[in-house]
Length: 593
Image (cartoon, rainbow, N blue to C red):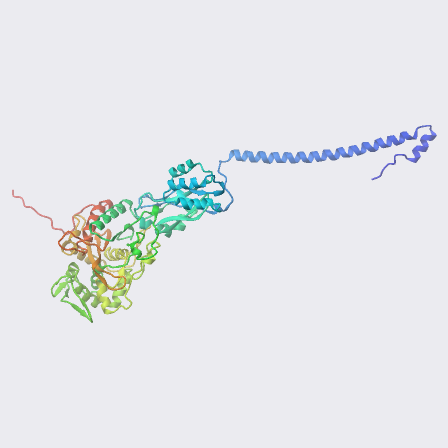
C-alpha cells in the first residue's frame, strides 16, 4: 500500500514561496490519514456484524422449525441410551383353544436399596422384614451397613407392599418398573405352561424368560417383537382341563395314590385337550427342583410326559391288532391259554384260571397274559418291534415341551423271545401315558398315525397308516367288550359307549426287582367306541382301594371308576351328546288292540 508522506517536499517549498504555513499541509495530511483508517475499521466492523446477524438468523430459524415440529408431533417419553435399553421385557400371552388367557404379563415394581443414600438403615431393615416376612432383618442390616452400594431387596412387589415401603420414608429405598409373568388360573395346567422367571435384570426393566413347559419351548416366539404381541394359542380347553384336574385330584385322594396323571387327546388330530399331573404346583410361585432323591417325588415332575412306566395289560390290544392285521388270527380264533406258560426259568401265569383256550376277543376281555403271549410268539420279535416302533414307543414323544426328550421309553437291552412275550402284556417296556394315548389314538381312529401336539391345528394332517380300518374297528369292538363284559365294568358311562383296557403293573424298585404291594394302575379308553372322538388315559401311582375286607390295587377297582367319572363330567363339555349305541337292541312292546 502506498503511504502518503505527511510533509511532501514539493508542497512545502511551494507553500513557502507563496507565503503559506507549511505546517497546515502536515495537519491536513494527518487528518486524511486518520479518516481513511476510520473508514477501514468501520467497514470491517460492519462486515463482522453482518456475518453475526446471519448466524443468529439461521439459529432462530432452526430453533423455530424444531419447536414447530415438536408442537405438531405426538408426545412420547424419552428413552435412555444406556444398557437397560437392550433389555426387552415384552412377552406375548398364552391362551387356550377358546382364546381364554392362561399366561399374561402384569406391570409391577421391584424394590432395591442404595445404602449410601439411607438415613436410618437398621430401622429400615426391621420395617422391611415386617412387610416381607420371608426377609431376614439381620442380613438386611449387614447389607445396608456394609460397603455395598446397591442391594436388591425384592424382585417384584404388590401395590400394597409398595405403599407400605413408601410409608417407611427412607430415601435410600427405591423402586424400578418391570413386568412379571402372571398365571391367573393358579395351578391349572401348571405342567403344560411350566413357568417363567427373570433373565437379564436392570433397575428399570427385566427380561422375562421361560424356564419350563411351553413357556421355555416357545420362549423365542413369545418374545419375538415381530409378532406384535400375538398370543400363543394352545390346544387345551381351560374348562375341560379344570374338570380333569378336579376329578383326578379327588380320585387320587380317594384311592390313596401317591400320584396321578391324565391325558385327553383328539384321536384324529393328536391335539391334547387336557393333560394333568399330580401333585402339581402354582407357576406363580414355582418351587425349586430337587437336588437329591427321586425326581418323581417333586411336584415339578410331569408324570404324563416324563414318567415312564410299565403300563401292563393296556398293551395287549396291540398284539391282538397286529395279529389280525397280519392275518394270523381273527376275533374268534381260539388261543391256547393253558398255564403256566414256561420259558426257561420264567413262568407266565394269568390272574385267574381261564381254562384251556379262549378266543382272541376273550383273551382281551379276560386279560389273559398266557393268551396274549402265545399271540405275540406267532407274530415274532422283529415284526413286534416294527409295529411298536410305528406306534411311537421307541422314541420320546414329539409334543412341544422341553421335558419331552426326557420321557424316552425304556427298552430291553436284548429283545429275546421272552421279551416278546412279556412286552405283549405290558412288562419289559416302559413308556409314558402320553405314549400310550398316542398309540391308542393311532390304532383306534381308523388306523392312521397321529402325533401329539399342544398347538392348535388349522388343518388336520393324516399320518401314515398303521392298520386297516377293519382291524381298527375290530380292536374297538374288543375294547368295548372289556367295559361291558370284562375287567372294566365300572367304566361304563351311559350314552357314551366307552371302550378301553385296564392295566395293572407291579412297580419296580430303584435297585431292581418289584414291590409286592405297589402298582401302577392304568385305564386307556376311547369314546364313543362306534365313532371315536377322544382318547383318555388315566394312571394312578401306588393306588389302594380300602372299602372291602382286603386292599384292592388293580385298575378295575382303582383307575376305572375315576376315569368313568371323568368322562361323565367332560363329555358334555366336549360337545358330545349321549346317544344310543348302534346295534343295541331296542325293547319292542306289543300292544293289543
